[in-house]
Amino acid sequence: MMLLAYSLAALPNAFAADAVPSEAVAVHFLAADPLAQDSAPAVADDEDGDDSDESSVKAENDAVRSGKSDAETSSKASDRKSKKRTIKIIQKKNFMKIGRYEAGPQIGFVTNDPFLNRYILGVTFDYHITEIFAAEIQAHYSPILGTGGENDPDWKALTKQILSENSVSPDISKLDAMGSVALAFSPIYGKAAVGRKVIAFDIFGTFGIGAIHTADDEKALQITDKDRPDYESTAQEWHPTTVISGGARVAFSESVAARLEGKATSYIETINGGTLEMKNNFILQGGVTFFFPSMK
Image (cartoon, rainbow, N blue to C red; front, side):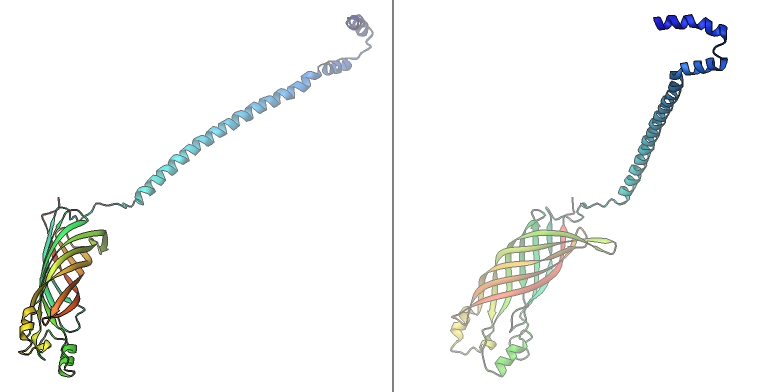
């Protein structure tokens, strides 16, 4: 209060005596408002800050917008690429066996008989219970082409050698017929591309039982009149046998296929009236089979 009174009291004297020049007054007013000078730049700074904030927000929005656009563009591009690169791994089978019959002729030969050539003609008939399991019946016939001797086409070179040169009588009997029933299963199925065509195939095996008919070779056994009664008692025989086989089936269409399989048989044979011999035959056979009715 005292300072304010003094200033008011001194003010008229100052103007009256011209103690303070006008420039000083001007300076006094400029100096008397220092906050105005300091606050002006501060206000400008705040305005600049607001502008910068707004510009940065706008830039971020633009960036977000552009980012979304890029994401959508890249997503569409990836979709197009994925469509172009789509590969169907699981495809519908173009060859089905379930509920269908399979029948066809077969030809083959016994591969492990050291003394005789045995060529086989046969037929197979299967009913496929499922895609994996089937019931199978097979019948085979092996014709006897000769009656023995040097010109017998059934005799191999070893047989002719040991009979003519060594005078040894091998225990020879000729397989001439066989029948079997078996359970077949196909655990492996696949496809193969041949040119532009897709061919289906499967791997199968069979387990079963059967019967084999054999005929002793009289000339190879060198049967005499003394040995004839014993020989004739077992000259023609049926033998129970086990049957195990495995092979592959290739389907050229839904109705036609080719089969190749190996078949092993084991049975006990009585030769020349009293000699028991274990026989193990391995038959390699192949053929064409037909499926019916048509696929559903």
